[in-house]
Length: 293
Image 1: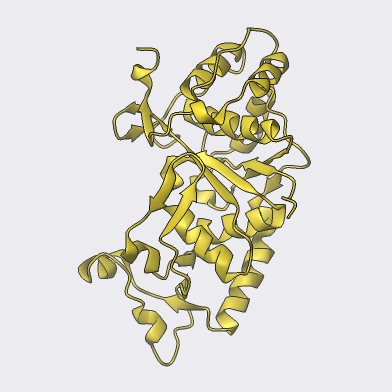
Image 2: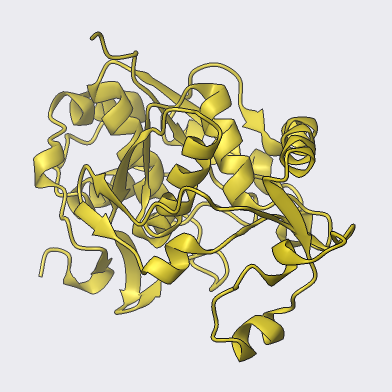
């Protein structure tokens, strides 16, 4: 059986500027795609407007361009896909594969911390609130290309999870699965903070009769143990004026050989040529201060 052409992606949220942790995900996914002679797509995951920073989407795209991380095709914005998400939700509701839920976090916490599906058993059915998928598939394990066998808590895997929030916003789990299927993504390369979420996404891929992509979760960049760099904790933006040093620092973090300092395009060409998946550290997080120590 002939494997489909490789298609990877980088999918940042426009909640701030790209920082060093973002660069690891972008560069890691770019190198993996190009080392497979595949396509590397960029998707802006802008489904949470309250967390968006004005101008962040343009800033992210300019930063990728400054680093020579040029994408194939047109950038996909998730806000362009709202109708596809809504159509799928309505299909789920009509076929009783999803239901409305009015349970608050407090209610769930007092009943053991895991949602027990109570709203899905009500008669008559609720007609407003958050919407949860009836999780028939309940995937609790998968094989990651870097982390190896991954298993999550069974209660987490079996939970009926939210696909549309009570405030009307579409949930990440639904949007990312529909978009990965729509774009034909064959492998997802991203940080280990989304390792557990992969099980829910595989469950949803399976529920929809889509072939799940392969998974490759990179180590997280941490300022200190258990404290990852993120836009929420105000990680500094990467340097767009002189990106060469950051590129070599990111390659070192990923266990790759440094490249000759040149134009970003030449540096990335060399990085692709010598890319070696087997040398990427498999631990789930790396504290920045330990690099080269």
